[in-house]
Length: 258
Image 1 (cartoon, rainbow, N blue to C red):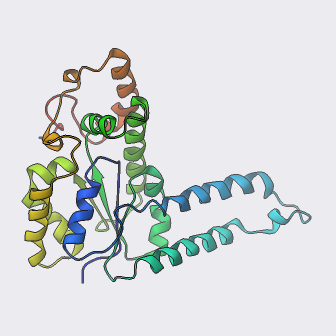
Image 2 (cartoon, rainbow, N blue to C red):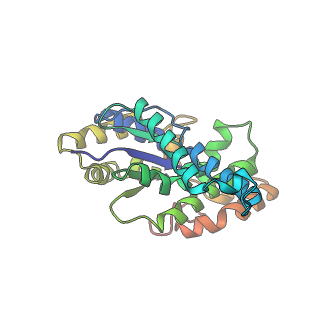
Image 3 (cartoon, rainbow, N blue to C red):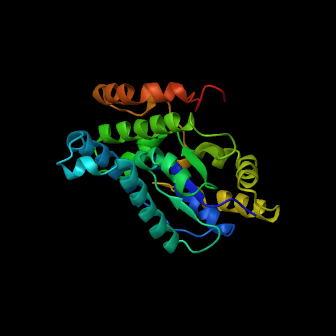
């Protein structure tokens, strides 16, 4: 039996959407965008902040008599009940591309003990280039900081995850090493051999979302983009640490191992 549920996480513009198409192609069900379960982590943090102020021991204060762990557990169960009711198929996935979803993974594992995770990643240079074109309403600095936030959140959460329940998929590997990457995804999810060709066909024919034709395939060196000195400073301030942590280069070579 293939593994389920599958949570697709990672920075926007990193291949999360093509992974959704691939899972649908091999029999999974779900929504193009989730964006519901990250709220659980936001509420969790709000509960901590609230009880940090009003939860100090006092027999005359109601908040002080409420166990925040019980409250958070009941809130989590509401999220599970609503999510399960809207995902009735035995094989289902959720795609929520933001750092709050990544930080919610410990709670997701409590609620769905058999859940697995696919982390979609992409080098900051190409990711920011794509984000700026796709989402021009946000500032250049927002895109740099948000990419770094997602990558840092995954590195932190990954430390606590046992092997075998997560897979990292780089968008460039989906394009350049399609068959090998499809094989890794198929094996990870426990799919049958008949599904491998489906994955390969989807990744080859549909490609990750592109802001312009062929853009998903392009890689850049940092000094070739025409960014201003101010933009380069912003990029390096936010992204350098995570670029190095993931082994990404800043030249035309995509990462330091290729």
